[in-house]
Image (cartoon, rainbow, N blue to C red; front, side):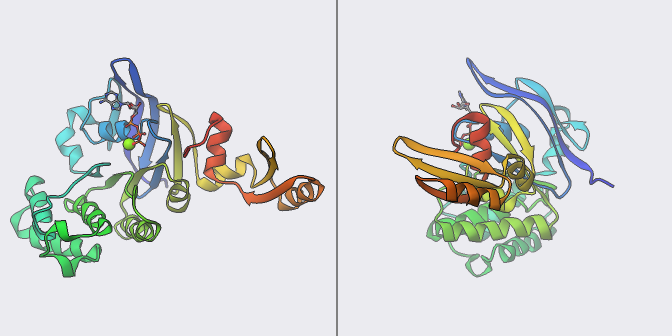
Length: 285
Ligand SMILES: Nc1ncnc2c1ncn2[C@@H]1O[C@H](COP(=O)(O)OP(=O)(O)OP(=O)(O)O)[C@@H](O)[C@H]1O
Ligand SMILES: [Mg+2]
């Protein structure tokens, strides 16, 4: 049996005066899935998240949560939605505990439940020892962890993470990945994560939707997307640039390497190659 659908998006469009930020996207997200929305700057990721979380009205199209039209059942749907916006912030002068408490009040979490949920969240984020510290004394990674678990306090079914690791150094990024995976696996919560980091999408997501200029240009498991292109890339370094040839088998790639008179290198295909193949440009320039 397939897992039930939480979110369904149909022909979603958002225009800003002359600019079409989202040009007609369709997708579903099912219970417990970990889905990535991968694309370059300006592709329409944040605009999509803002529409899906009720911050921005679509120009056209429809959003359904558990089969109900979002705009007509917004209050109920928002109970299913947890979100960490691209520039989500905490109150720097409040403690970690107080920041979480504020969220409990804003989301109508019953008084008798608040303490337990806050303590669980702090524990889950590895921040229990810092509960009474003002957030302004936290490192960037600690703040990010707190913002993420804050979004879980009202026990949503789907968590939207808009570029959750942008600007963090690699070690802190990995810590955050561990937390995000733990949320997906232990809490069985569906996740829609936007990113322009190839490795983040490949490592974390069960399924990736690649977005460019407001359109989803392909989707699938990272493995399938790469396999469709070829598993190995032979890079041939010419004076005027790098030529890339794709191969399904390592043997074929090696044979081409041996026949190559210029400087050559073999590497595995990445989602960057998938994007390049479809658009003619790179995600990260
Ligand atoms: N309020 C707005 N008014 C006008 N144009 C906007 C507005 N918000 C977004 N845009 C434009 O829509 C396009 C998509 O923006 P969006 O923020 O959704 O992209 P993104 O994929 O999140 O990019 P980034 O990786 O930079 O966060 C961009 O060209 C952007 O300039
Ligand atoms: Mg964005």
